[in-house]
Length: 340
Image 1 (spheres, helix red, strand yellow):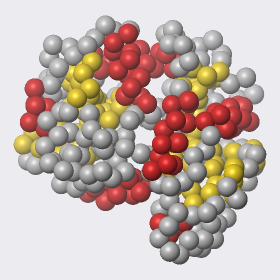
Image 2 (cartoon, one colour):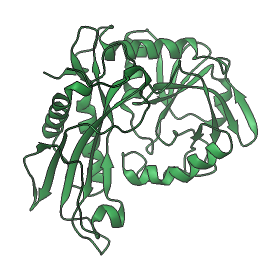
Image 3 (cartoon, one colour):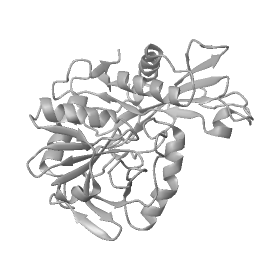
Image 4 (cartoon, one colour):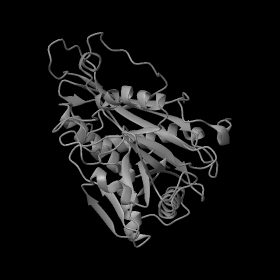
């Protein structure tokens, strides 16, 4: 049975679903996780997450495929990335096998909220963990909680993906040798003022430069960049402070193995961006958000692909990857995890 929602008109927001997964870390070990209907979180007023932002998270989706299966897309990579994020914040890593178990159980328990195939919607999954015990001195918490909830979401782009405008930000997203490469809540808190300021000035997103020299392209507040050269090569920026996007890695594989394109993962100078033919932002929510222009402190960089539609190669990448996710294009081994 499918929940009675207007699937084709869902926005990208939170809708409470019946079940979520919870596990606790205490006395040096993780408890057996449970699926619960309780969506409330109770912690000490002095909890590590509240005092020192000790929290990490992930984001992934479950889909209904063309042949009626329910699948998640590469959740093993989310499990691995969350382990690395936890290590950086001195948190006990949540085991990968338990992570996958939590994903399976939450999707299965909320099966009625997996949108129908063809609706353009998906079931968004948000795993996260945080320091739950009291900490007043600056140190890691002693106890932690891992939770995973889900919410049905509509397509990121209503009526098709229109290219967006991005500005080169005067703010830094990450510090040299900082936490830019992990999915920590504090990184996103740092970007909030910058994105509000960008919106107030008429831009959709920020382009952050490397924090040390401010000459190389890094990423936006929540997505990796992907460029296409005029001779059809795919180029993605390389830096120790860029979050390793699962979507970006998947698109690069698709480019090489499905579309026979050359892929370069290397540092990208800001002053070479004007020579690219296409530009996109890679992330779980939209897969690829096409970029039509970049404002470099008053100077506009206009991509030949324009402001009306995705570039041709960006469109092929998008269509192929979403086809894999929806089961209309054969998937590489291990990319789709079926929920029974």
